[in-house]
Image (cartoon, rainbow, N blue to C red):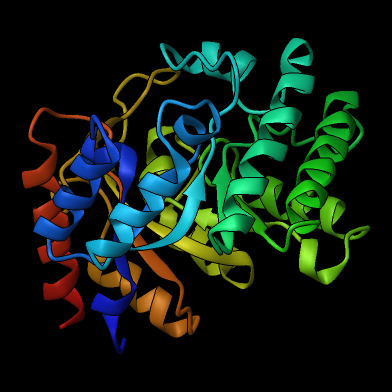
Amino acid sequence: MSNVMDRLGVCSWSLQPASPRELADKVASLGLRKVQLHLDPIREGAWKADETAGLLRLANVRIASGMMGTKGEDYSTLESIRLTGGLRPDEHWEANLKAAEGNAIFAARFGIPLVTFHAGFLPHDASDPLRTRMVERLRQFAEVFAARNVRVALETGQEDATTLLSVLSDVNTELAPRARLGVNFDPANMILYAMGDPIDALQRLAPHVMQIHIKDAKPTAKPGTWGSEEVAGTGAVDWPRFFEAVHAARLQCDLMIEREAGSQRESDIRTARDLVRRVLG
């Protein structure tokens, strides 16, 4: 897989930066030149847009993609996130759509081509009224970003590959090619949510994959509870086989290191960086 370091970056929230300058400094210190930027602090005014983009540019770091959260998400248990995650809650739908509009403005302004988010749990049953509602909301989200020439991709994990493929088909059937939803593939999330083998899922979802998260996890020993996120290379993801599947699918998308647990984030991210270098040569 050629030019891997050109495609390797890090998720901004993984570094827990207190300011745009700290983010730029940390990414540069890792020897990385790409970042997936959490857009909500900019939209909400906690970070200044021009300052953030300018400092990253001075550090020779490109904003390769963005990420947005949704209102009211509760990750304390699998059941709580099933009820509150993504676009599912009716009481937050209008606020989430407005947030998408604001994030799309910033993404377009600074040439960010892709924004990812969690759709929320998608029902497997095509006749479920909730699924119909979720498909329509996803379509509206995609159109909001497409109006500003930005693509969107769904995080994997909260449903199995079969369900996600079916929903993508339902959503994309009525969207123009420039608006069609893609996938941000996270192998660890498949394990954390117990939604199937990540390599099998990648092979099936490959035509839709627009970005990959480098994250690792171990499955839970107690059904109905979370698995555990682990330092890359110490979890259940078989990275050599995973990257063989990436290569076989001819995926040339960006690889964004994500670390959402632990107290040694920068060290863990370096470990993930070195793992990718070692496996891919």
